[in-house]
Structures are given as structure tokens and as C-alpha cells.
Amino acid sequence: MSPAANASQAQRWNGDAARRWIAQRERHAAIRQRLTPHLSRAAAISPGNHVLDVGCGCGETTIAVARSTGRNGGVLGLDLSGPMLEVAQRLAAEAGVANIRFVQGDAQVYPLSPAVYDVIISSFGVMFFDDPATAFGNIRGALRPGARLAFLCWQDDLRNGVFSIPLRAFMTHTQLPDLAGDDLFADPRRVTDLLASAGFTDTRIEALHEPARIGSDVADVMAYVQDTSNVRELTAQLDDEVLVQRVLATMAEEFAARQHPDGVWVDAAAWLVTADNG
Ligand SMILES: C[S@@+](CC[C@H](N)C(=O)[O-])C[C@H]1O[C@@H](n2cnc3c(N)ncnc32)[C@H](O)[C@@H]1O
Image (cartoon, rainbow, N blue to C red; front, side):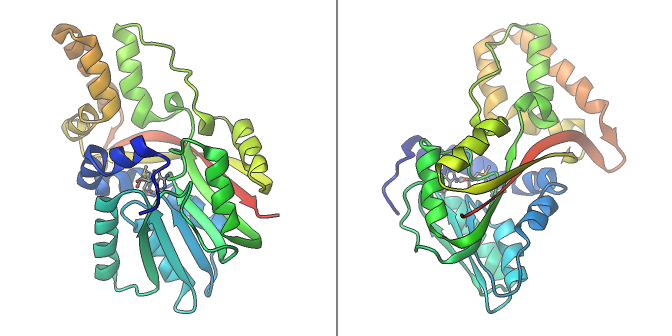
């Protein structure tokens, strides 16, 4: 593996976060289910294309891309996480796709071959760099002249039911620290500037709003949400069991209001970002 510029992320995605992500892999795929087709549309992959999937995780998107490129093309999945790549390898073998390769490395510094890819994609895998300008510069170097980048990232947490329903439940019962935060990827102007500084041109950013199936019923969703890092941290900070129970009751009511015959659906808001290499 290349030197870890993003040491804390490398630790996170090779430890507890990877274990939790793998355990919830199918739920996460269901949450993204209506968003992924927008990425496919923007990536516009043709047979024979060579594609890089940055932060490919367990490889579901990578495998779908491998099918689109056909035997004359192929895809490389790059990710920090050894455990998630093991799952990706297994899923690719089960799917019987041969034109796919996975490598463990940090996209910010990984020595990618220069000017070989027709398309670089990422499904929520580019939001974790210590130095995003260096990372996007490194990624751009792997694109052929005129080739394109297409990625998905989340809009502000408070616009996403997956994150906002738990956060607002805490806000109903307690004062939270300022949530405006410093999320570069939530702000399209900052993303445009970032990509320009890394040498990309013609950045387009489209707001996506889609329903996301977060679970089968309220009990299932509550078990999941209570195990997310945000909710675990806020619960620990609250340190008041009565208040915690009130927060959880409010959360459960909100999810119950979104119960449909086929599951609990919340609103998801993502950005679809595309840009060209010169
Ligand atoms: C939110 S998950 C998304 C995974 C997958 N693309 C999906 O849609 O299911 C983020 C992924 O980015 C990876 N990641 C984070 N920082 C990275 C970096 N610097 N280089 C490569 N991968 C990274 C993590 O290991 C994780 O697999």
C-alpha cells in the first residue's frame, strides 16, 4: 500500500468503520439505489473504456462498470480499505467479471499510471481527503486529455433524511454545537473552485433529490441509526438516559411517518459533479 497521507482515514476504513460498513452493505446499496443511475448517466461509459473507481468500497459500482466496458475495456477499483476490498474481490468473482482489478491505496498519493483512463468515477468516495486539491490533482493526472470525472457526494447533512432525522431529533431536545460545519463537498462553489485548482475544466454540478430506502421498518431503522457514529457520539455527549430516550422516541416517530408497505423511505440529497480534463 502507498504511504498513508490520510492516516486517520486509513485507520478508520481499515477498522471499525469498515466492519460496520460491510455489515450494512446491502442497506447502503438500497439507500444509494436511486442515486447510482445518475452517476452512470453522467459517466456515460462505452464499451472499450478504461475506468478508475475512486473509493470503490465493496465494489458494487465497480462491478457494474466492468460490465459496461466489456472485454476490451476494464476498471480499476482503488480504495484505502483492505476489508472492503476483500468483499469487492469476492463479489467480482461471484459476478464472473474478469476485466476488473482492485488495489489498496490512498487516491491522494497513489502512483496512478499517467493519462490512461477515459473516465474516473466515484460514488461517495472522494469526500475524505486531508488535502483535496492534491488528491484531485493526482486523480486528474491519470485521465487522458479531454476525458471526464463524474462523482456523487452528499449535500448538507440537514438536507438528507438519513442524517437529518437523527440530528433534528437531538436538536428538538438539546442544544447541539453549530452544525453548519466546514463540509467542503456540501458547497458547490467550493467544489467548483477545488476542481479548477486541480486543473479540471467545465465543472457541472447537479442537485439530486431522490427517495432512499433506509430499512424495512422502524425497529430495523432505529437499530441501524443508533449504531451510526454520529448518533453514538451525540448519545455519549448527552450522558442523560431520560433525555436519550426522548430523543430516540422523536426519531422513531419521524421514521414511522415515512413507513411505506415496502419499507421506510427518506429524502436523500446528493450532488452529481462532472468535470473535464482540459
Ligand atoms: C462512503 S464509502 C463509499 C464506498 C463505495 N463507493 C459505495 O458507494 O458504496 C467511502 C469509501 O472511500 C474510501 N476512501 C476514503 N478515503 C480514501 C482515500 N484517500 N483513497 C482511497 N479510498 C478512500 C473508503 O475506504 C470507503 O470505502
